[in-house]
Length: 194
Image (cartoon, rainbow, N blue to C red; front, side):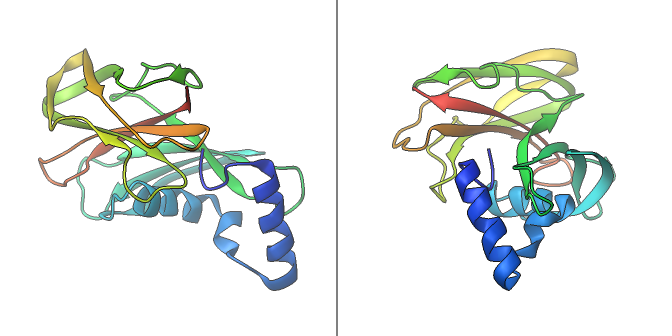
């Protein structure tokens, strides 16, 4: 999903890293998780790691805004992309508990407009949805702001239209916040553009 669109791109970075030390943050799952959250998703206030678990080729990194009493905004799942000793970390999804994005299913083929949804626990939640691609800085589409939700493990859904999809893989991100931070929790999934 991020930061490399293909294995060839990851291998190209490995060669550049070995020859000149180019972008060493790709070797660190914490820095990669924060770069994904702050840079790609644009959640600037999420600026710290709240938890860390690395097991072999998999890492789960919790991220949160500084001073946020509620704790972790999301646990980002990363996998080593490639097989070399310097294989970079690649974001592949989030491990969801109280806020999930289950529709569309991970890896499914999508077209615009699409219905997105999942489950949420919380009080007076305000959900925003964006469709993103690696090759664009701006979202390809954003849901009407904002979807009201709340309760204990309650379903939520939204419709979102998007355009200009040129990448094969798209990222769908749903976020909620507004109580103590603009983004207090988020969840992502990867889909294929149809």
